[in-house]
Amino acid sequence: MTESWSAPGSPSRKDVINTFRKCWMTSTDDNNLTLHGFRRFKTTHLLNLRFLEDEIAEMDHTIYQAGLSLGQSPSSLGLNHVKKDANAPSIDDAITREFVLKLRDLLGQYGLWQEMRLIMDSSDGALAAFNKIMPMETCSLLDDEKQSSLQEDLSLYEVYKTRLVRVDLETRSRTDPFQRWLHRYLRAFRYWRLSNKSQNNKAEDLGSFTGGRRRWSYQNTILIAEIIGRVTIAVLTTVFLVTPLVILSQESSKDVQLYTQLQLSLYND
Image (cartoon, rainbow, N blue to C red; front, top):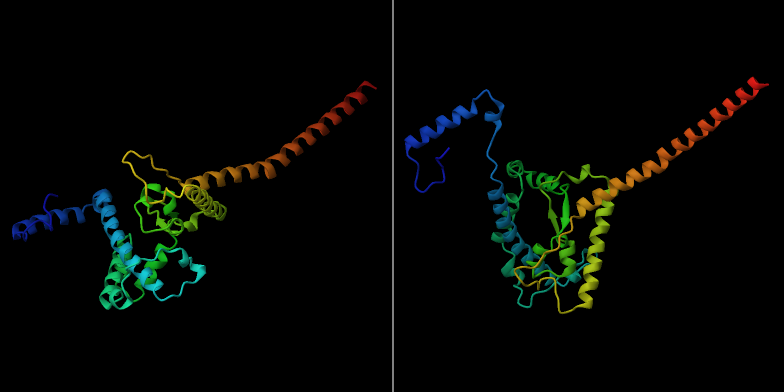
């Protein structure tokens, strides 16, 4: 299909009719591949998400700076680790009605899936979208050194607490609780190692990576936790299930040998 509704200038009636004919043929075809097969614009969708991510990140930074200006920083949220801008705008200038409406619209577009865009029109759309996003598998921004190096406004603790949604994986409800526990402690271990490294070398900061040929470090904690979890379960299964069976089989073979020897001795007598 070469015609495009977004082409420069309004399409002529002939183009609209030709496009309708092609769409009607594919929409009424008997073959499921033709009927339900749609192009996947993966790169374009990901690029659009990156644009939205940058816009929301700027607004998120503004919200945190406005909140810090109130002087209320509960330690349970880790806000005492957040960097405070010297020239942060006032709340009256930053938090406006237009700001809230723009943030709401961007978060609705950032729903990651088209079905989430549709339910945003309902009264409970925001709650439903939040309910769909939260169970998605996440990883720490600290796992991706290349991406974290681009976030110069974040401290090491903020990078550690920042979560990236893995849209290519299943939800966490399908993940074993033991693997989630391993995943959490692997993230904490990486943060502890990098924090000690930064304390030993104050000159090197998280956002000061230079050099175009630098080899970035990546830690796929989800995959590591899955491998460790499966190996651990296999070992425990072997210890608590297979080992007793082996012992019982050996005991049974000993009983058979004793019975055989007893039969032979009686036969010889």
